[in-house]
Amino acid sequence: MTPRTKTDTIVIHCAATKPSMDIGYDEIRKWHVEDNGWDDVGYHYIIKRDGTLQTGRDESMVGSHARQVNGTSLGICLVGGVDDNNDWENNFNDEQFETLKTIVLKLKDKYQIEKIIGHYEVDDVKKCPSFDVTEWKKNNGLV
Image (cartoon, rainbow, N blue to C red; front, top):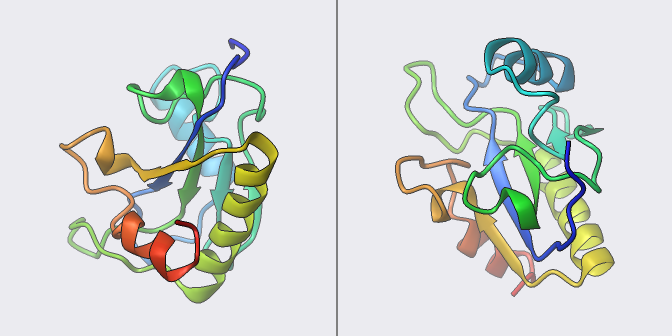
C-alpha cells in the first residue's frame, strides 16, 4: 500500500447490500481481497446497520474505493444501499446517518477537508451511495 500525501476529499459509499444483510468489515474485506485481488479492504471506514463504526484500511494509506480520487481521499462505506431486487435504494437508518455525520465532522476537522462527495460524483455509472449527498450535507450543516 502507498501512503497518501494529500487529503482533500471524503467520498461516501454504500456496500450495495440489501437491508437484510447485516455485514461489516470482515465480509467487505473478503470481497475486496479474495474476489478483487486487492491488498486490503478499500474503504477507510465502514458503518454497519446498527451504526457501529469500523476501521478499514489505515487512514494514512491511499484507498481503493473511487479510482478517480483514491490518491487524495478517504472512503466511508455505509452497509446497505440496494433493495431486494438489487436496485439502488436509500435504506440506511438514523444510527448509520448519525455515525456518518460524526466521522465526517471528525475527518473534516482533522484534515481541513471541504470536499465531501458521493461516489456517484466521480463515477457516473453508479448511484452509490443511494442518496443525495449534497442534500444530506445541507440538512446536517456541512456546507
